[in-house]
Length: 163
Image (cartoon, rainbow, N blue to C red):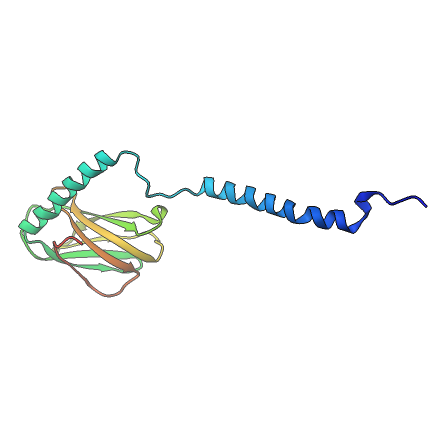
């Protein structure tokens, strides 16, 4: 009687199976980790720190101008109306919506004034979630910030106290 070759027996395949699955799992996790790096890593911290100081002066300028307003965001439209402050020389606003965790969901809108002194724009389809909204004129002289969860049908009160 001749012994059967090893590849026709159950136990060698059983013993090979688990290490092989572990190796394949490690390779797939490694490829996934390399391809999906974090978006929040900054290369030059010094330049980023200087930019943050510049941003804080923009918030202080909005506070000095005593700018307040009401922000309305629906599924297809965004509007902003100033309730306090000097807004006579503002011709358009830039709204930047930054998703809290996923950079790919960030979007911007340029708002133009209508006859009611309300700044409005139409929105493309966006992803639901928590956003930080930055409101500034197109010249970038001041900046307001508010945290909202989209979609919302409620009016969000925006004031110059940066958060």
